[in-house]
Length: 289
Image (cartoon, rainbow, N blue to C red; front, side, top):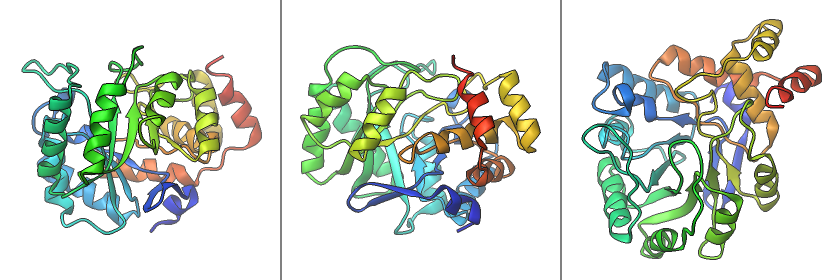
């Protein structure tokens, strides 16, 4: 394990589940628009193998990336998996012929999705399954009792080890907890988008991981003169500073930056060793103000 990943440490939200706080998001292993095969299949395989070599034990994926393709590449590159590697997937949407992301949360749809994840990853049980509730970048109101209850039933059957939720409100997290234990929450959050500050603090008190998707701004990368100025002063990239800020935001916060480039992967991992001084944190905290 490299010193960079060690610097970020690990987090244990549940018995038998310990994740490096510096994780890897596999979405970009698919083709453009997260649809179809990658332009360079061999490079995608190489990135995944380097993820493991760097000491990362937390890979985030979904069978609707591709669809199916990302999970198939993960299986090709890493199966049989190292004992300490945990693959976190999500269900609750499908892909249509145009590359859209329609919601699919009926119990039947979710059972199909779980079995597709199992098959394409080559697993008998999934480490963590997140139920996606909202749209692409924000939560939607409403009860999650029926779909989360369906996943809890599959957990009792031994198909899933741990459950999480994605793109949810604090109220939906609380509702899920009345049905089954929640080990992680995956929402849109970064240095410029901080709607979940209170939720992050509440989850940390409960020993629940918060995993921001779009940690670097998503399909539109973060752009901030303040971020760039801090990065220049520290001799780091904007992306490294944004990741370091997240890791210092809460000890229960885990990051999953994605890339299809080995060089970019190493740059992201190096951010785990970047210690932001107090004055830099003050400046960065003002970006979302």
